[in-house]
Every structure is written in structure tokens, then in C-alpha cells.
Amino acid sequence: MSWKTTLYDYVHHRNRMDIENSVEPMLPFVSDEAYLSAERSRLARRFDSDRERGLLPVKNETRLSIRQTVPYKEGVAAECVLKRIAVGQLGHDAYEEQRVEQERIYLAPSPGGEGWTIRRIEPLHGEQRLRLKAAPPGALLEADDEFESVGLMRAPSVPLLGPGVAPVAGAVSRRSYNRLEAVRYADKWWDGNNPAYIAFEVDCTSYISQCLFAGGAPMNYTDKRDAGWWYKGRLGGQELWSFSWAVAESLQFHLRTSRSGLRGQEVASAGDLEPGDVIAYDWDGDGRFQHSTIVTAKDSNGMPLVNAHTVSSRRRYWDYKDSHAWTTRTQYRFIHISDAL
View (cartoon, rainbow, N blue to C red):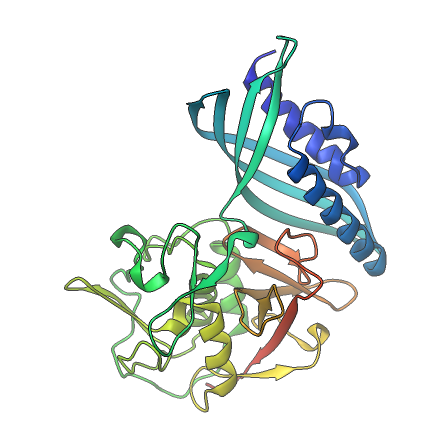
């Protein structure tokens, strides 16, 4: 059996694992105990969440793409893209959720010399890798482990507006928030990057800002990083965008405190949200928010389904209890976007 066959077996058995809510299908060829332990916890949370919702999982499908492979001392490391579809039944309604996950999978020949074993599975750009690091004075920045801060990213990760994307600076007129257009944009770009922008390495909040902008939210150009909500791109070696455009902590603060243009109101529960609204996630419950999503639909129970980047997701259940980033301390902020802009 080749290492590539083992990868396809992994995908097949991972689908079984999610349907059966058990890591048992993975045990014959996955020896990564940390991964298996984390999956046990995730599956238990998801089982409880599904039972509470009344969701019956029906099937999982995964399409595997091998992006690149590199040798390491024990075998082969493969960087993989997993395009996943989970299908279920919620009451009398069919339910479908999509997700794109990226993993680095380390394989080595089995001890007996027959076949291959998966020694380690590393999520790439997973929600659990999001954390807050030191930031310039007056702002908190969201960053991937490989970067010091959003503000100090290398040039290829700096966002850029293409022709026709940005309105004339300072041009603000009274308008209404178009929730349908925001959702359309979210669905169009949930699993890719709009070529009019260069994506951040961790772009969950930039993606949400793009959705809000597509819904007609006017930019508030202050030319100050820690004020307003704006994005001009990169000019003369300078990065011209506000923290609120690309940083989860800053966006949720701006939405709640803005008194004109793009603004929102915190509501008590997820069920109070509408498509086009925003949820912020504080994984550790320490008061700093590290992730953002946009509501794109509601399930038959009236609860939000969200789109997101970082782990590209479409119609994902809002509570994220199926994420390895979720902890018992996780807090949410539910923000209803004002219809009058």
C-alpha cells in the first residue's frame, strides 16, 4: 500500500468517524495520540450540540487535494486540502454545511514494513491557531503564529484594492444596509479570495468587512489605523487600512461604538440575529475576540448559520463547538447591523 492510498483511506475513515461520532475508524492507521484525543473531545461536543438541535447526521463527503509533498526524516509530509460536505436532517428539512480544511499530514512506513502509518496531523490556518499578539499602541491585532502582527506582515499578505472596488474617499451618502447583497458576496467568496483584494494570511475579519462593504456599508476614512472603518490598500510601501477592517477585536468594538455609518447593536442571543449580522468569538473568555463570522441563513429552529474564512465555511452552525478552538470559556458577541447607514 502506498502513502497516497493511506491518505485516501484516512479521508474515507474520517467521514466514518464523523458519522459514527467515534475515533475507532481511525485507530488502525493513525498513531497521533494528541490528534485522537482532540477529536474525541470535538466529537463529544458536536454530538451534544446535534442532539440539542435535533440534527441527525446522514452522510459526510470529502474531496482530497494534495497541494504538495516534502520528505522528512521518517517519511513523507503531505499538505492537503479537504473540501467537506456534511449532510443531515433537521426536523423535516434537509441540512447541508460545507467546509474547506487544510492539513499537513506526516506519514511513515508501518513498523512491519507493510503499508504506511499517519504519525501526525497538523491543521493549517485552523481557528485554534488564532491568537492575539503584541500590537502597536492603542490596538490589539490578530495574527497567525508565523507573524508578529497584522501590521508587520510581509508584503504579499497586505490587502490591496483593485480598480473599481474602493469608493471615492470621503464620499458618504445615506443608504440602507442591503443584507441580501452582503449574503450574496459571502456565498460567492466563502471558499476563495476576491482577486480585487490580496488576502491576509489570517483573513477571517477582512472577509467579513468585504461582505459588509458589499452590502453597502460606507467606509469611514479617518486615515488613522485605530479609528474609523476603512481600507485603501497599499501605497508607497505603506499599508492603508484600519484595524477595524482586519482585526476581530477591533471590528466588534467599532460596530458597537460607532454612531454613524456602519454600526451595530449587541443583542442578547444568537436567535435574535438576521442574515447579514455578525458574530465575534472570544475562544478563551478573556475579553479579547479572535474570530468573526457573518450570518448567511437560519436553520429550521431559527438559529444562525454562518460563513467564515480562515477555515472556509458555508452555512456552519454558529456555536462552533465542532472547532478545536472552542473551549468551555468561549464567549460570543452577537451584533445586529443597523439597517440605516
